[in-house]
Structure formats: C-alpha cells, structure tokens
Amino acid sequence: MKRLVIDPITRIEGHLRIEAELEGNRIKSAYSSGTMVRGIEIILKGRDPREAWVFAQRICGVCTTVHAFASIRAVEDALKIEVPKNASLIRKLMIGTLFVHDHVVHFYHLHALDWVNPLQALRADPVKASELSQKLSSYEKSSPSYFKEVQDRIRQQIERKQLGIFNRGYWEHPDYKLPPEVNLIAVAHYLDALNWQTQIVQVHTIFGGKNPHPNFVVGGMACPIDLQSDTAINMDKLGRVKSLIDSMVEFVEKVYLPDLIAIASFYKHWFEKGEGLGNFLVLGEPEGDSHREGRFFIPPTLIKGRDLKNYEDVDYSKIKEYVTHSYYKYSSGDEKGLHPFEGETVLNYTGPKPPYEYLNVESKYSWLKAPRYMDLPVEVGPLARILALYARDMLGARELVDSYLAKLDLPFQAMYSTMGRTLARGLETYIYAHAMKRWYNELLENINSGDTKTFNSSKWEPSTWEKDAKGFGLMEAPRGSLSHWVHIKDGKIANYQAVVPTTWNASPRDVKGQPSAYEASLVGHELANPNEPLEVLRTIHSFDPCLACAVHLYKL
Ligand code: NFE
Ligand code: MG
Image (cartoon, rainbow, N blue to C red; front, side):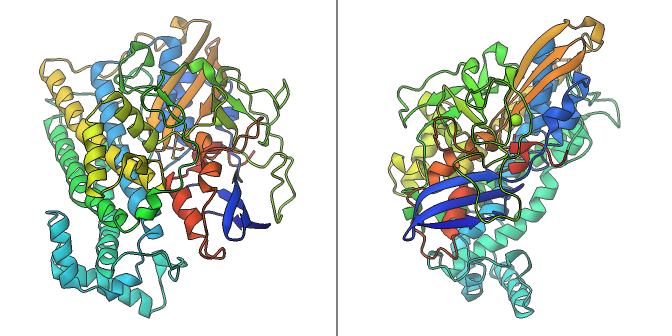
C-alpha cells in the first residue's frame, strides 16, 4: 500500500498535514494531523477573567471575534452577568458580518480554485461571459469590457510567467470541468470579492474600533450609543451599517450564490462523495448571549446517522476530549476522555523527530485533541447547521435548501457530500445576511424607544463575584460549534478550555479508533493522479480548515 502525504495543505489557516493509505489510486484510510501547537489555555491560567477575551481572540485572525465572544459569554455565564439588549444586538451584527465575510472569502479565495481554472479563463469570449453573467444575476459589473479587462490582467501575469496568486495549482488535472466563460466570471469575482471584503468589515470598525480583533468588554459592548454625539454610535454610523448590510445581502444574492450554483452544476459528481460520518452536531447560537435563556438563533441539535426526523437536543455534560492519539498527557491516563470543565493541557510530543517521512498513526499523531459527543465523532459547521435548521423547519431553511437542490436537479441526499457542504455554507450565508436586517431593525427600534445602554457595570468589581464559579460560552463560529469553558477561583482563571470547530472536524482518532470527520470524508476518493491530489484538497477545503483555532499555541 502506498502512503500519500500532503503537508502543508495550502489555502487554509494554520498547519494541516494529511496522510492517506492508497490501494491503487483509491484512498483506503486517512489521517489528519495538526502539526503546530499553540497554548492559549496555558497562558490564560491565573489571569483576570475580564481580560481573557483579549488573549483568546488572538487564537485566530480569520474567525476574528468568535473567540472573544465565546470567552466573554463564558465569563458572563460564570459570573451571572446580564448583557444589555443593545450590546447583544450589536454583537449579533458583528457576528453576522463575520459570517458573510468569512464565508465569501472562503468560497472565492480558499476554495474556488479547487473548481475554477484561471488558465482556462483565457480561452473565454468576454462577450459570451457577459451574456452568461447577465443570465445568472442582475449584478451590475457584467459588461464585456469588464470581463475583457480581467482576462487581460490574467494574461499579463501568465505572459510574465508570474502566476502570483494562481501559482502552483494542479491546472492540468482532468477534473477541471468548467467552460472558459464560467472560469472567467469566477476569477473576476475572486478579484472583486477581495475589494468588497475590505469595505464590509467597517461594521466591525464602527462598533469595535478595528478589524481584525475589534474591542469588546465583559458585560456589554465598549461602544457608547449617543445620537447627539459626533464620536459615539449615532445615526450617521447606524446609517453606514445599514448600507453595509445591504451591500452584503446584494453580494450574497447576486454574486456568491449564483456563482456557487453555476460552478456546482458542472460538478454534480461531487454531490455523491466526501461526507464521511453522517453524524452532525450544533452546540447552538443563543438568540441573546446566554444559553441559559433557552432561546436560540441556531438551536443545539444532534443528528445521528443522517436521521433528520429523530434529531436530539444537546446535553453539554456529554462532551469529552480524548488525547489517546494526541500529543498531550492526562493525569488520569490517556485512555479516558475529559469533560472541558476538567480539561487538562499538558503537552507530550511523542512523534518522530522532524524531518520525518510518515506519522506514527498507530500512536499519537496530532496536536489536536479529539472532541467527541456521547463518544461519537461528529461533524460541526455549515452543513450541520443547515441540517439542524432543516430538521426543525426554522429560518426558511427547508424552502432554501429545496429550491437550490431543485435548481441543480438533485435529491436531498446530495447534501451529504463535499459539494453539499459547500452549498450549505452558501445557504447559511444567505440566512445570516438576512438575519442582520432583522437585528439591525431591532437595534434601531430599541434605541428609538430611549434605551441607549450598552454596558452593565454591576458585576465589574471582583468583590461582587462568587469565590468559585464555572461557566461556558457558546458561539456558532463560521466553521462550526465553538465553546469556551472557564473556571474562576478567587477572582482568577483556575482553568480554561476552548473546544473549537476545527478540533471537532480535524481531530485524530479517539480511544476507540474512530476517525474524525476529515479522516472519514476522504475514504473512497479515487485520485486521478496521486501526484496531484486535487480530490483531497476539494474535500478538505469544503470544511474550511483552521488549524490556528484548533490547537491554540504556537511556541512555548
Ligand atoms: Ni480560525 Fe475558527 C472558526 C473558531 S476554527 S477559524 O470559524 O473557533 O475552527
Ligand atoms: Mg482546546
């Protein structure tokens, strides 16, 4: 049997290595390894819980904000701090912005080149591209001269032998299936989205001062609302936020989703493979900030074995992290899983000395722990959320999924696949973009009713806290369910654990040898040419990996 190694996987965040056993050109088993270690959980011990979010947010610059929110929610949960309505709504607008931003950037800049071949775009007829683009949507940038200009830019790069951002793709691979005009439209929007994303992050700068890593505060938001002030959140700034939300909705409806459908229609064979586990978990996005209120924008949901009818609610005591195949040591032995409140972060590298040829996959082989729910490996992320919303018939998910599958003439089971995951991400972007309009209206209504409060200072002083308090914060992040778990003792952090989306999806095997979502999803892939493993990239990219989030420490 031949072992295929891909290290690093590019167009992701952080360092991921995939090893796969090949039988002929078919993947028989796969191993996912996080090859770097970070250690925010170690750094946070002994610190003031009010500043934990500042460190936690630095876990990642791609899903900026999410670790800050999860951290703040965990501390607010432990200390029983209520968040003013305005602050919750502002947080939601920032979360919505992140979702739209992150998913669009993933689609065009991290995932599209798995399907789109920029070299083939040179063969396109700009007039035909323009006609097709106008058929797909009413997006204003669609003239022949616009597409001609993009084509000229790519041609210049190729003639100078400087492919730049398009360098080193597997451009000769036989499974690039798009017609030249679709390739050209997608490359044009790749470049267009680069510009557009610099604009929409202004929602973060208006409410949080900067992006990435905006400013937050435990107990609310660090931005005052005062309609009479030039510097606080006023009508001018709120008006700007509204126009940015409109721009997000427009880009999702007129660019992202039409491109996604146009591309997917040429890759229907990718709606038949790449799912893996069939178990899906959503820990939940609270409607406000606290899971204790029991109101959820995306409700906590477990789906086992694709059984949407018998979905289950979530019991947070059933989460455990295993380290049997991870470079950590547990005081109670490496066979037993630990709940995050009892979680331990003790590094224990036992792998081969670099540089090495292969991982020792029989033993420990990753810096990611292996989170499991009721001892089951599960997939988290856009597909899990869309399935949960579909099962519960919420937020228009049924109509949305059914109508997009109908456009592609595909059955529901097509969702359980690599391309299904990519489609689910697009559809949830639509849901979040539209939810932002509602959150914006609610914010405006609340302000107009005379409530301008954004910060609750009643529990700011440590003397008001319980001596021993535990709490957790939930946050549906773009890549899936995120949870931060904090134990506060005598005003300081006694223990802190972050259980992260990519840790769920990209983990190594657990004590029972059960593979993770990444590992299971690759099994059965036939590679056209093992030297150009485009098929592996397609499926792994469909999860949108972020290893920076998954491991949390770079150097001790
Ligand atoms: Ni660094 Fe993250 C998201 C979190 S990772 S991107 O979304 O939390 O899995
Ligand atoms: Mg962790």
